[in-house]
Length: 244
Image (cartoon, rainbow, N blue to C red; front, side, top):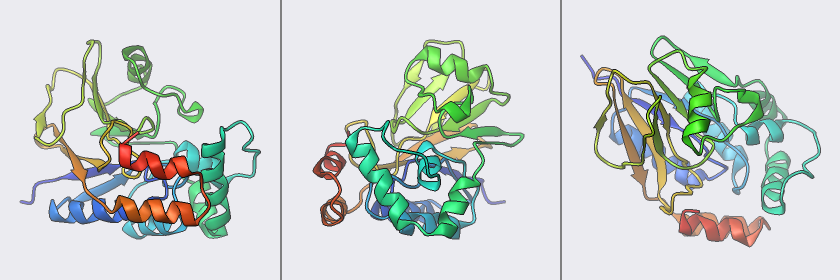
């Protein structure tokens, strides 16, 4: 019987080269399922292509804050310039049908095995960040399964309930302790912020109760060139090579 390997990926942010590299790695790793944790659009140069690629997978997707803003018509004046520029570009480039797709995405997903959210299960529509143990505990107050997965901060992290515990391992398969509840931040495909430029996603092995963070090299220079050609802020190109 084929081993189940569930790939969780998040925060693509219109980076088509990073997404394609991650999808190729998923195929090489023989994942059996894929789940997208949102923020398909924003920041980068190829929102339309990224939405199309995710939809073609036919996998479950939850909504991110950038997905919500791009699919809406509200003012973007509350955002700083670099964020607003990416949102405005994504609004301009995605099709009406793609906006409908983003608008209709659910905020959360739950199975018997795990829960999924872009930000936090604590008030998911308010887009809280999980940066500290207190943030994680607010999330855990709404988690009904042993494990949950999120994105939003762009940093791969393992949080454990009721224990001052945070880990950011990469590479090896990590067997989790079934006596604890976990929240796993799967990192970012298109804009990592952990000082590592490589695209990040996670494979979950439910039969082992184990996870593996994957880092994937992609053509950063090509994405930087696309950002500049699109007239997006230079900082959005610079940060990709720095992982910040």
